[in-house]
Length: 191
Image (cartoon, rainbow, N blue to C red; front, side, top):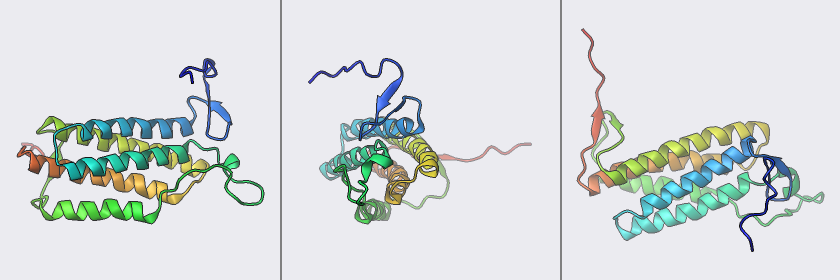
């Protein structure tokens, strides 16, 4: 199988299901940003950390591929006229969201209470995590715009939202594990 097809040379690409759209379409931006996020999560996973967190990040990467597939699907091509699914796309369900929530709760139990906003940084691994969090927030903004135009499974929106929260808590956990300083944002006092 060749990687290049030449079918996108004029600025269009195919969605899952065959529909061609402009490469600047919000659907392409949405799943493209999920792909970018997945690459950042892979970079975090490649850092030195406990094996449990690495395996959790690997699971998240698989879920992000599912999210990308859902976002890359033309909703008109996904369902047959008889109501059955035409394309075999996995789902994001409530248990995927609950897993992120449970993991955040577990991590939070071992962290000091947060009394201020935290500036990203303190260690390269923590910084990667904060970059992934901001990319996740951008993906959420784009997916929200797409959802308003062409709705899809609401669990996808919840998953992306919860994942950005998870990445923030993970950054705090990694700071703690790596004995890196959390830099508090304390507003400057004028005059």
